[in-house]
Length: 195
Ligand code: ADP
Ligand code: MG
Image (cartoon, rainbow, N blue to C red; front, top):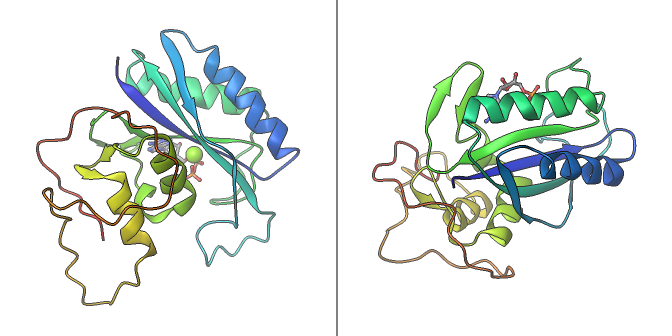
């Protein structure tokens, strides 16, 4: 069964309670089994130059084994957001709940309503850190999640050509709890590379 990794975020209402409610909804999804859930991570609003004044976010990641097709899964997640009272007012504004598909196995998609992996996954520590905690062997867009995380934390000179990490020499490990379980087989090709 494919493993979909879901990003959960909230900074309105009662974020810990909203995260718990969202997880209950995920648990109740048909043709799906909740596999792992990260601890909550508190993070400032993203992106760092976000002009909207708002509270810090509580974020978590859940691994969901599912046979729902990616579009069906997105529709279900949007239904949950609606049921939980999410109102879309501003881009990157405050929200009661945000549910994103970070990755769905090794699926690649670039349609207007669904991009896989999620277009900003590699720029968000609050996504990469919990993903790496949950699935240290996970590969996204053909590269280990730990490489994306290392890359994010590394100062990046403007003219850095950003070569992909070598598949034979693993990147520096982050100090995270380990519970190895691959999300899905490595992709054969990679258009994206850790920047
Ligand atoms: P964001 O999560 O970027 O803050 P929204 O939750 O308002 O913003 O989502 C905006 C749009 O992003 C949604 O209408 C959805 O169709 C689209 N989208 C594209 N790819 C994904 C994905 N992988 N997961 C969730 N939404 C996605
Ligand atoms: Mg979203």
